[in-house]
Length: 249
Image 1 (cartoon, rainbow, N blue to C red):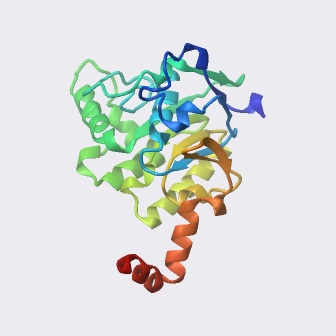
Image 2: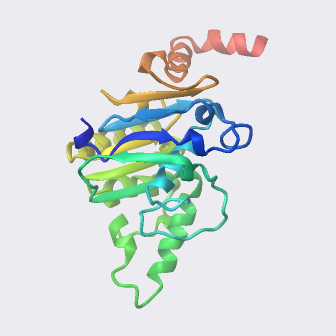
């Protein structure tokens, strides 16, 4: 399996960490991290807000050469330096194949990516318009969800490594289902995904590895054992009861 994937293992170089009492090394997901063996196709990082899953995902992306605010490896802009130095302490083991395509999506900074695309396309000496790879329609002239779907449907070309941080933030349930279908197409074209998410729809992708980020660190978990699945299931089965208990408290 290792030879068939782009990223096979993430290792924290613990002997190079000066102190596990300072951020981001104080986060449980980092403090207890030794190594993670990734699935060759689809991996999810799940956990509560503040668990450190996005911090870890960002560090993996930066260690692999992506811009901290998102985009492909050709993007190098920065509006505000806010990423940690965790990436300097990670060893990324790769397979024998190299991705033909790659992208790091951060839902919170995709606006900045769209702005950078427009800025680069204003340069008359910059070559073919970059926006052509996104469907030739300004990302700023679309809703957040539409622009993300343009990224998935138009920009992602297969045989790629796609790192997505909370992609569901702008997506309706129907668009999340469409994202699952597009993911399947890209996986069949030999792509690999690493995704941080809260969405019980997205994490239902079959045969994926789900890593739970919690107080005890990070560990694999089954889909139906995730809190996201259990809470959503219980609420949909009996919303009146759950709301009654919630409001009574």
